[in-house]
Image (cartoon, rainbow, N blue to C red; front, side, top):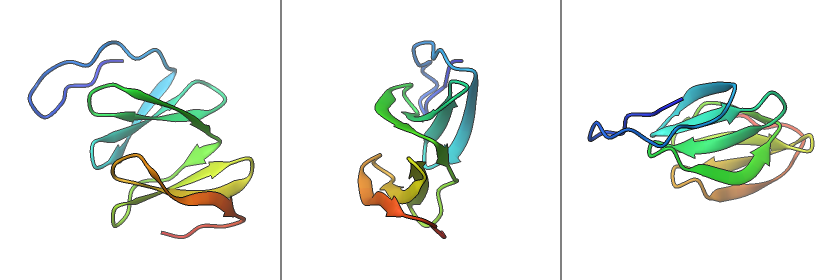
Length: 88
């Protein structure tokens, strides 16, 4: 997969089975087991998640080890994965 950023520049190739847009210039990269967040420049975060949602109001719900938390539009953990459910 390759992403074109807002200036039309291609990212380095991203090796993943599925790449899905999440909003705010972020994508989920699914390797068949886990999800990693990928920004519009094709940079993959190291943290792996069991599941992700779409961004809503600048927050993205993410699941890790069965618990939910939230990531902000910078890709930083805003609320740690410590909750059994999440709405957003």
